[in-house]
View 1 (spheres, rainbow, N blue to C red):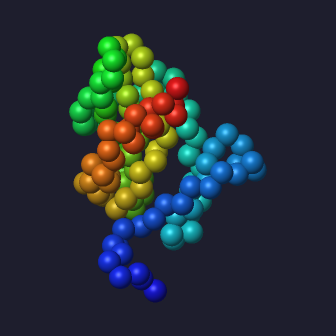
View 2: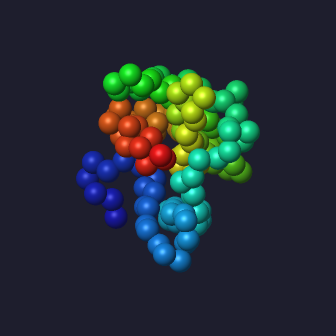
Amino acid sequence: MRLPGASKRRIIVLKASASAGAGWPLSLPFGILLTALMTTPSPDTIDLSNADHMGDLARGGTTWSVHLETRQDGPVATGRVHFVAGDVRRSSAWIFREWSAQDVKARFAEFSPLELWRLLESLS
């Protein structure tokens, strides 16, 4: 049953779990369980050549460039966010799962600057 005005967009539910160790299990509607670790990958694994520059976040004297990396992962596209300020880089896990790279970009566009700041702060 769908609520009036509900979109066809899939909902990803985040659940904290002690049994999941350092990660967060993501319950996807079609039964796939994915553990997304919210850690910063080593700098050699961050490849911005596959990422689109989505804009900048500035607060005080610090400016972070925001990049969205997408890749095809079987039948779905996945995406993660990279924040770059000089030599400092922070990256999320593959937190977006949509049907295409364009859908990942559309989902990213729904994030407000405040939500991006909160994501960046959670990666510190």
